Length: 156
Image 1 (cartoon, rainbow, N blue to C red):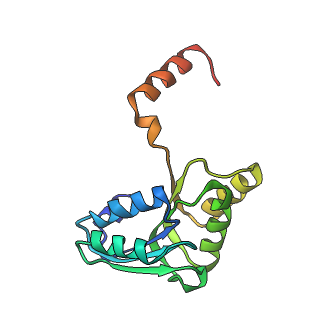
Image 2 (cartoon, rainbow, N blue to C red):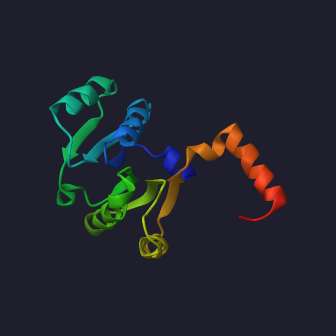
């Protein structure tokens, strides 16, 4: 991710604007980087959400809202998929049908079945995608303590 950190004019695609997606967007809007575009795809966004987002956009990043994957750019620097787990696989599949991103962030719980995991693994490997799974709890002190105790006793 070193080269990405130095890049200017970053194009971001955010899929899913629920609670977690909105938190991702708030973080993006606080960046001091040169964000070129933020394209958001969500089937339920409305004018109230748009106004709230524009009021948070102090850096005047260009933000576009879409309800169709066909409207997306051909390439992004990073894609964040923060939909519910029941539609995450389909969001991933549709995004990579119409667009591409070298960097991908997925929310945990990833998918609902093993077939979707296998497809995702193959997609990532074949397209040289660098993927991250957002699991912040593993950084919490109590989870580290539990993990240490489990590792010291037996494998789960």
